[in-house]
Length: 363
Image 1 (tube, rainbow, N blue to C red):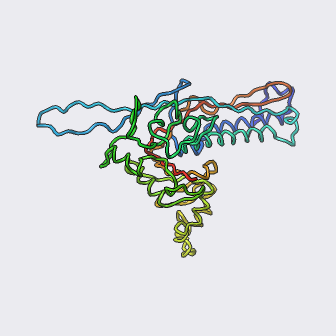
Image 2: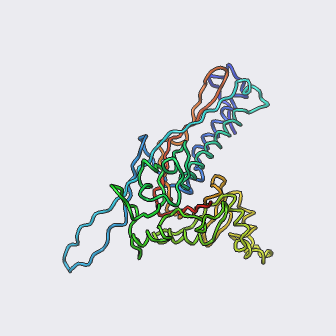
Image 3: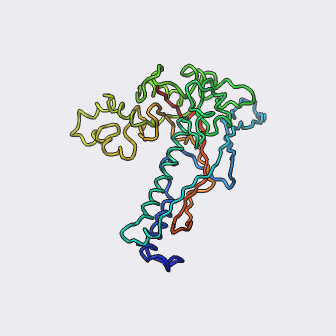
């Protein structure tokens, strides 16, 4: 229940119009405290009071026990650190409607327009995340690398430079071979040395061609998924998510392995509604979660391009989301019979876990 409160515009606008404005303000207040799905799925959140570039430091697993004689003091060890710089920018959206439309009780143009603005904010953030994670070039977001999308031939030596790739990346080609002052992001893990990890999938890159021979856009090879799992798992992660486009989803539904185990027992409710089955797809596809492959949750999103899909370890949140200011709503009166509001937010994105994702590229 919303109560109409008299304000400065009461002498010029009807009480109906005032109620519309209050309805809108309450709706936006609820929206501001609602986490957008793409942020909770992909990102580790940070906050900062400063604008511009923000530095975040991470510790590598550098310390190790050493054997000592009884009574001796071990050698003191230091922690190896890795630094990532994230660029924070401000984005805004203004919406205005005429006073005549506000006074007409048959319409609620303000509510309609600003609800669409709310959806525009979510579309913007989702697109920004997808372009960041999939290495796609966009002039407005400044994603990709040096005015182009990240390819299988893009080397780690270029990707680690903030000037080339301000939104970061997963490991590029030859991750153990760097020049100049570039700091290596790859380190030994488990029974794999850095050189072993750099030799996985020939070049060690987390960006590779689908099928190894430039498969057509929308194609999805199961061998690509196992390769991606190897690249992530060998570095200490555990792949648990696949992000695909609608074209890949069509290919996936055509795979007998994805649907066959669930067609033989349609009378078994437990089997029919389990993850990966057709009935499961029917029930939950509206949320984007469309099934499982090899124990990995499969998500579909229309911002993902038809010639790329990704495999990720979402437990470690591959992206850093730095928020200088969350979604803020201000009322504005620009004049000329227009009443409106504007939304602004200031944030930055960067891939901070280079081992936690793999991008498979089609033709």
